[in-house]
Length: 271
Image 1 (cartoon, rainbow, N blue to C red):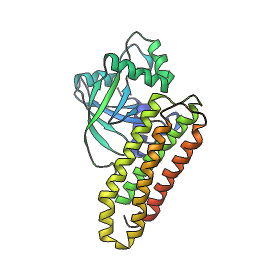
Image 2 (image 1 turned 90 degrees about the vertical axis):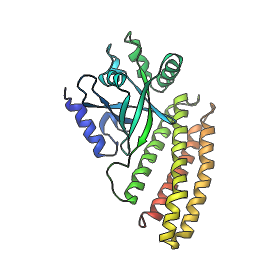
Image 3 (image 1 turned 180 degrees about the horizontal axis):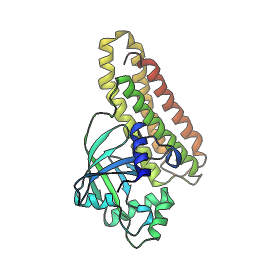
Image 4 (image 1 turned 30 degrees about the horizontal axis):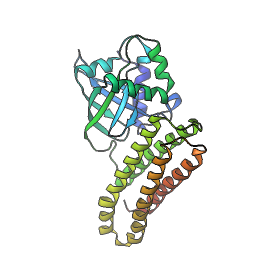
């Protein structure tokens, strides 16, 4: 049945590259489209997700209900799903985690958000955790120029940096949780792939058309090398408990943000 509240969230999500307002502002959300197990029609749900390196994790909590959500029952019948992140849309395989892996991952997610544990305590069913593994990615949503795409990609990185910074700020001085470390590793991996694509693809193409950018692009490539070092520092910082972690995270986030700003100032007019 149509749900006006959910439909409004989906519309807002698609109109704003995955950004939402109100109680969902700043959260990690995606759109998951499954095939109705009885109707055969597409069914889209908006769900919180967790990064997990080369896959993402979603939880079939249904708000702690004793019944599994419809989207979960749909993917059991047909595990081929469509994922929308706000920037990209891709096909994915949906695999429910089982046994020890499910329990270990669920414990990690409860550490990140105690609400999952409260939901589990209120129902006799085992709340499922599903891994969504990308099969094939399509072009960015919305089209636009290379300049538009760069801004949208950078905006997504800035949002994730802000989320990680906030998670560190609220974790206290006893160390950060396992899921926050995974979030950081996934961000670092994404930034590395982005910078590699720029250095190997976009920058050489720009130089062919605009040789006057030689000094600027040389400086940006040098920044990429330095950022790789900073990303390694960030990973190490999150590995072990230590006091006063936030100032170091703030320093690294500031360096990364300054690089994104520099790229935009140097390249947008030419893209």
